[in-house]
Length: 187
Image (cartoon, rainbow, N blue to C red; front, top):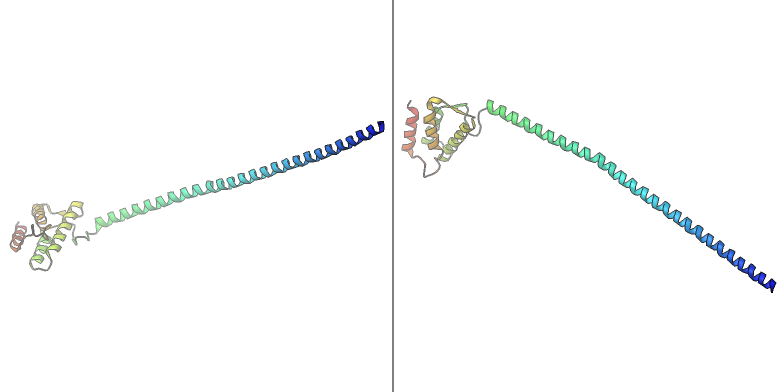
């Protein structure tokens, strides 16, 4: 019996050792798996940080570039607008207005007389005369054209009468045009 107890004890010890070995092997595998998982997690974190860093680097380089290009476009358009304004200002001061076909900077009654004579000779229509009168009036208002002071009252009256020459309610007949012509020709 003693031998049998010994054998049973040895058998139990062997089984215990085997179980312990299996447990240690299992513990090692679990530890290796945890280590592998943590390495994989660290790799993923590093890759994510690398991607975020790349995006951040891209944004840090793109945003200033975009801002600079926007500023340059704004400056370019501002400079072009300034140059256009300057050129137009220069042209307006040195070239007569093309919209009303007046080739002098000072409007005299003789120019209105010439337009009236063309209308009476039916060389221009009432609409063309009204358009010319309105364009002339507008040029005076804009300061593109000045009126001789001695003739200012006659010219203002004539332009007022002619601006609506194409409207039947305000149009002057031939007698009215001749009266206007006579007033302009008298000193």
